[in-house]
Length: 211
Image (tube, rainbow, N blue to C red; front, side):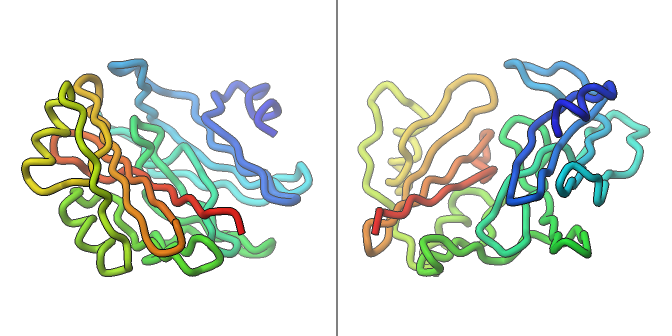
């Protein structure tokens, strides 16, 4: 469906498939940013079923210098639920998109996302600084890993000195991405990505060992 959307003059951000569904994020107006980034002004998300348009999600018209809060989409482990994201470095999640074949609804991000057949819940840590996020993760059974920072990684070394032992690496240029690692019983691991000097969480992903 991305090719069909592109043929109409739109610029496709990404598309995901789930059974008969295809969900496409796209825009027409944007501005180039630093480090190869793009600032979208009119992000949209379309839901297709077997090639037929079912719903269109769009934001208010941008009349000032701000950017669209919509544009990208990703899957979740929640039934009939997808995640709407900014098309901005880090692709921060902004809302959930529920669609069950009959009703399409934009709703707040779920407070918990289950992983590994439900035994590894991850709370909503989007937008939180890493110190706040790690406290919340601990409440849900996640333990910070003890990772020795690369001596050439000054940002990671500073975080280590502040007791943030789980920092894996940080980028000293661009948008300042950092990676943090957590674990729990059963060999389940969690990687958290932050952006900026305040180490704001933009994404996470869990790894479940093969059963």
